[in-house]
Image: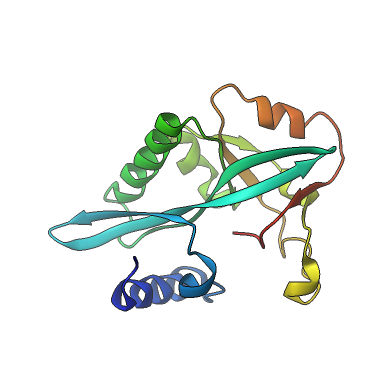
Length: 171
């Protein structure tokens, strides 16, 4: 259960990091798994895994969306430790994790052991776009960061140029 204090901190950090906060952690993230990295009772980094259903060529895949990855202090290794723990969780649970990332942080995710697939996000579509005022695609194309031990899902998604449908707005 996320406390109001933690939610307020996460919202403020998203504003600082991205210039906006489009998340409603109280309402939309009830099924998400949150990760917090603390040092002396202070949260240094946080992120989440969100249950996501992908539909591609009449196949359904249940993955965990990697999102809201923020290190509150840069250059101390907090983000890497957080991503290592998220990867360990995905390994233990035998789950696939996918997220969206901008070019400037691609190298960071690669150093953390994630694979990067360039421009794949341009084919992702939110299947309930009417609920987001028609927002069906990401504002800016991003690369996909992925943890998929045998690359089955990524190989499948890259096998054609067909659209990839997701059941939640872009996380």
